Image (tube, rainbow, N blue to C red; front, side, top):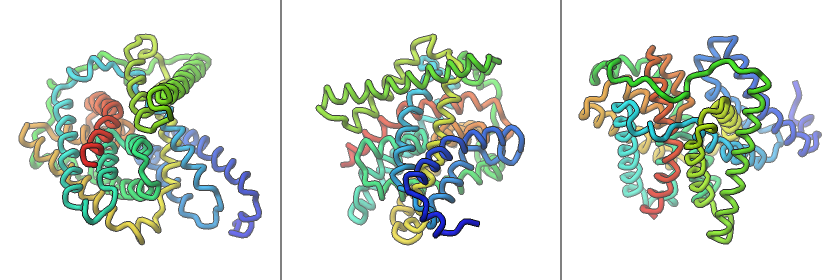
Length: 387
């Protein structure tokens, strides 16, 4: 077993390169294991990547440069955001699965109310609450990628982002465990049952996955990656034209808008492999961002931010639940839209399997993708209003 001294003898550059390779290859290993071992599929690859990142990030004897996972997370998410939107038929979003759309809108209203109230109550005790609330609106509208994007856009201090991400990981694990265990039975005491007649069969191709050749798949992946890089470069260029600099808010919003715009091109919307490529990038992102989760900081110096994050998250869930009961949203639709809002589309499949209702998968993925599309707008908008 290598000790701390042996690791310290390795040049830092070599260690950083090894970490970069590990961040790129580990998701592939987990995806392979998911097909072979049921526990991996049950836990979910994205959760495993988070946990592995947290584990590695809190090993004191690994002398890596913390800027490496930070840069990996920023680059992977910058590519993932437009790729997540390519396969989405935006014109179907509003009319797709009416109850799911309504429930998702209620979740958005809930997190805006919750984050606004926490800013009002804590603005005198905690610094940067306007940025924190904006980031939490993003993360609980679409998922962790939105929080990262908004944090970069608002130039939030890195320490705040790291602590919020750590808090979100811990709190998210608690709620996720609730959803996949007793959540359906408990919520069924208050919400009605899912009615199949309300579920609209999708006209898009989010879940269709016909067999294609490996050569074609590799070609498709290269195409969508090049498109993602082009969008990233174009967003930075437009920001330079408008603001005279590469401004975070402009780059993120332009990138999101271009991703949505590209989805209107039928050939791009129908290309196979873009969502899978984005999902792989999110696994890399999850591993890298997990490495930035400083458990010592969470336990020792950040109890206030942890409580703030908990109040916003669970406050939003409770308000969403109350509104769902008022508007007669069924329990499965509430669960899947809450999952899409809190975690993003990557968690929809595992939760749908846990509640034994695969009919809600497409609506959950669609709402999660909608969250990716509007989460950046909402988060930045709320932050600016509260500033």
